Length: 83
View: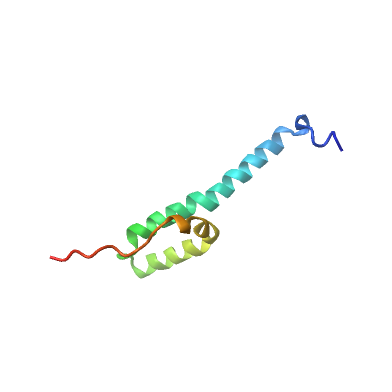
């Protein structure tokens, strides 16, 4: 049992697999939802119906990451210009 926990027994394939899993999970939980939030913020009021359906799909697809980032983002409506 002591031999299994030794760091020298971990081969390169295991390290590469771990790095791949960590990078894909970071991409799915942080990078893609941040991009979706940015896209929604830019296009929310001017999107066509097909584009809005794509927006809803992306929110559904990246929902766990949206939940992680939601406390840090603010999507209040923009102020109106009164002249």
